[in-house]
Length: 314
Image (tube, rainbow, N blue to C red; front, top):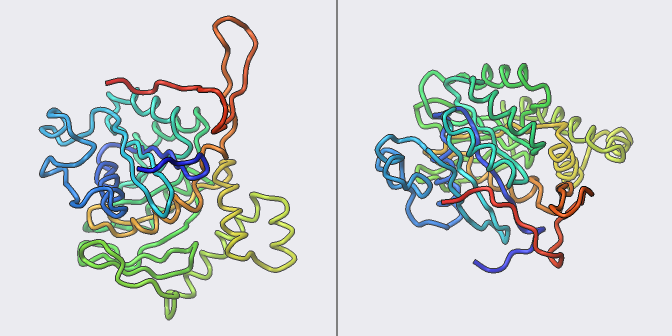
């Protein structure tokens, strides 16, 4: 992979209660970006991140794995973390090394105990976070109920996408409220079409989009003035507001899909490249040298002296 400058890097950790699909989503991200040519599965024991024999035999992640991909000139460093409470030390370590985290939600279960635990870790480390409601291709899923539980538990959660036909019978459509497009997926996970939202979906999408725009405007005083002056925001202004709100922790977008079918994965990739923060957009790290009691602040500078944090040893 070619050299990546800080503004073209995204460091993301995937965290959740066990069984929400982090490893499968990581695999789907690698496949859709072309980092791998065949998508592995947990059942077959051939995913990129669960490579240890204990992980393969137990079909769970035991330690954090670092995966690398590239999307539209942006380098993605993806940390797939364990979900079981026994291995939470790896989650905490991973969160210290990233600039954003995706909290996966099992659409058949909603907010779980593990969700609250990993959310607490992210809050302590002050890492910007978004939600990804996964497993929408399962039977008896109720997306609206899951979202209601999310917004009740986390008032800053806000819809950025919603499924059109969730369930086990051919789930393949998601409305992206950021781009206001209906994205239809092929059985192989590629996009079949990306068109303007129309028909019965448009009223619902317009209402949800308006709420998203309002929350984005609230993240920046200038954007709020623009919002009231123009009765809305342009697409560029919306992205700016979402970036600011995510970075400040005033909003946590909710995305959705089915990682196994790769539905919603391209929308997630757009979000990671366009909205999630780069290392340059994160506050400086504070530390104390061994030889002094003075606290130093280290910002991200490509031409600065080397500063490193060892967050994982093998």
